[in-house]
Length: 390
Image (cartoon, rainbow, N blue to C red):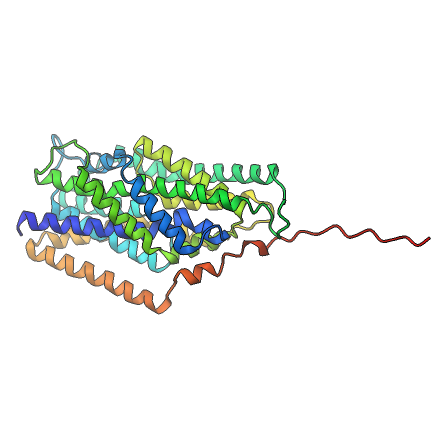
């Protein structure tokens, strides 16, 4: 197969992965403000799309981790081919679509890493992976970041409830935090664009390096940044309503002060990780923050069954995407016909999952029905003193 054609194919699938990343992870920023009624669903995803677009231009540190760190390349390493990158993308896209179908907020980032790792192992054996980078920049952040975000959200929730009172006469009170949520959720959306769009930038840059179109060790070119920003913004605007419903209402009943605290924890953790070049899962961070905020509000209940199901999805993401990526890489070794088979199977699976999702449709109306946060906590009014007859 002509090298130009395979590069175009890789770029196209990479941008589609970026698109799935957008609608898969919209919930990270906008699930809680939608759940509390701080923003209408379509307004929320529209704002998130704009901020994802802007955020994608703010940093390239994570992109460099992927394009020149995770897989050993260059001197003393391997020369990964566009065919293997293509196979890795298929693994990532298929897992993203499967978890979206079931409404699981799994990690798009780890799906991408798993797919690339599986394909690289098939092509060059286990020695192709830089396990130091994998441990320090992927696995350890995956373990530490959700806990860190959860602790921040727990503390912020406690402080929010301790320092304020029910001042607005509504059943839940502290309704002013809804306005704060507009700011904090916007910050999360900006942080998401800063972190997640870079992963696709890194994949495309890695492909260009492998064919000699770009020097090794360099960051993404401007056109790569621009198309990746547009792809993730478009995906975000489509709205991953299934995952928004799970994250906004499936883990705990989110109140305005909780949502504000959860988004603060999420944004702080993601922005710090992006600055350090950690290819963080924003989904794991957001889920940890929601759980932390649920533990921080007195009387709130965390649905540990749903949390366990999400955690299982996290554990399966790397190996599951890796297995699919490895199978796609084995087929790709057949040559041009293998690439064609991979493309046909990949597109077939995507269409099959999409058609299956239409039988159980979740849309903005489905998630807006749950934005009634003032129903769970009632304020007992002081009874009027009885008049004493003389």
